[in-house]
Image 1 (cartoon, rainbow, N blue to C red):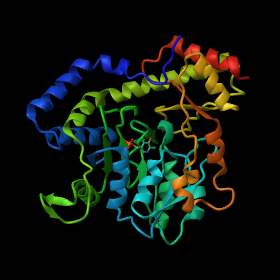
Image 2: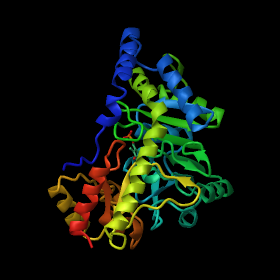
Image 3: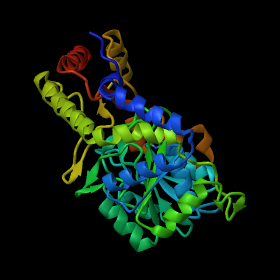
Image 4: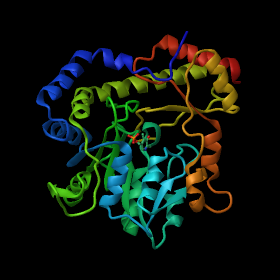
Length: 370
Ligand SMILES: *Cc1c(COP(=O)(O)O)cnc(C)c1O
């Protein structure tokens, strides 16, 4: 049996006709940048996420960049980011001339925790960027309390977090600004690059809209230096078809995660393979199903021989990236991120994965682990 790491076909086939007619609608309108399709997508996202303002942008990376720009972050500023995330979480800070300050992550959730952030806050600190890693919200209540106490902005990196909730509220509605990615492999995926920023603050929303479009409200009259962070209408049209199905796809992912739990137990893998946690009050959407396993590279090679796809998120912690060498933390750095980088393994979890495929994944794992 063959188990791809990710197969987007099952979610595409059911919506094919609807998606193609949405694309045709945009082609017939010949309006490709921003416009009504984008505005309607923004309104639908705002309603789904439960936030006042949603602004479509060109990617998740640009969402982070424009969010930090809107907060006025630049040269001389520090922004606290987790040492274990996708590159863009820290890259967006560095691109503005600010310094990413890496905080080690919690050993059970692999996410930023308020207690670890607190001692890193100094006179130059302007913001913190919790990442809702793999589809689980970071522990936001203590982070928000800390940020309020110290006057910091909180930029949620919700690129992996669409549909995830924390005490009943959605990712993207918890911090000062929320940043989403609709990269094709995310839980809500475009047919190209796309992203979104969210906020409750009307002044920030206005600033985000301005910066998205070269800082110009009126064409060729630039109030500020922004960028081209616009969302295009074709992506918005595709995303509008998919958005109403995200909750169901997330439920499928959760059901697959639960099935893995049962299969691991049956196969006696519970000691050797550590499974993802779902703390009380947080709904995990399993953007990725990441286990931790000793001799990870050997295990992965074995899965490959059984035609089981897997991935490593992430093989190198951010504080160990070559480009961030000048900002590397002192001494031992971020040991938890370092050890996670050595033993994390993401298994297939996509909606449409079959029970038989999951059994094959676990049987293949059991051949090499234990
Ligand atoms: C995907 C991702 C991004 C970047 O999104 P793009 O749309 O690929 O630019 C940022 N942060 C995290 C945590 C991500 O997973």
